[in-house]
Length: 115
Image (cartoon, rainbow, N blue to C red; front, side):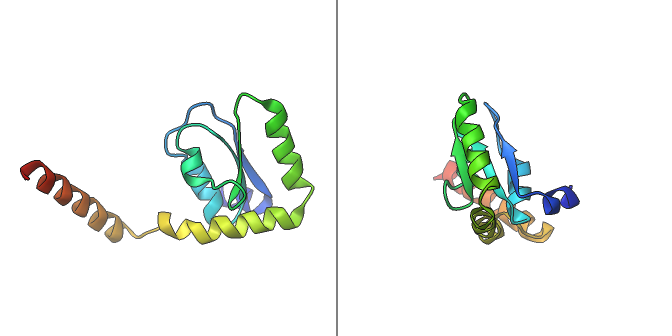
């Protein structure tokens, strides 16, 4: 998967329904631009014009236009990829950091339940 991202200019995820789009996070971590649908959790991680382009999944012309825009402008693809890599730090952490975050979340939930 890493090799595929490294060889690509961008990732297209035109889902009509999506939870947390892990493949998008992986692409952003590899510094790749993303064309992502305005659906589910995709707009939460693809910032239009900063890390990629957000499109309407029901409009193939809009999806095609975004692809052409990025694929015909290498500097745009690289700028969006740099934006993705810069944002990726908020999604990458060690197993210990993950465990600490989960423990903190559980602690806050318990406090809220008691209070």
